[in-house]
Image (tube, rainbow, N blue to C red; front, side, top):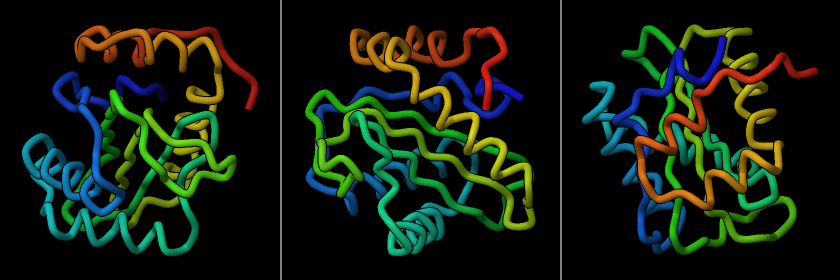
Amino acid sequence: MDLSSFLRPNAVRVMAGSTGKKRLFHDIGDMAAAIYGLDAAATVDALQEREILGPTGVGHGVALPHARLHGLDRMAGIFIRLEKPMDFDAVDRLPVDLIFALFAPKAAGVEHLKALAMVSRTFRDESMRMKLRQNSDPAALHAVLTERRSTQAA
């Protein structure tokens, strides 16, 4: 499994910024509806419900909001790079500019956790974060995210 298996080229965007998590989740919901045919309102609700359990800002300017959704038959991802970082209640209290939203089928079990761990490992890599921050072209960002990397330890 790698990011190319669930991140479509048109699911990568660069945005000027967002006024807050709620607005960002609405933007993600709209993208999920347009790209993957998901219900935008249900997607936003699922992201907000997950965020209540604990912030998904994992540090180093990265957030990994995720949810399980009805109407989805396989993993789906959305990547957004914000030109202006925003507060996300991250564990290190730093603002977030790299957001990878991951969606799994409602019945997904271990597959969802494995995908989330793989995304987390990808964004833990400092050189990966630097490459993403230095680029504003969605096609190039998709290429950086989906390039084959050598096997990494969990």
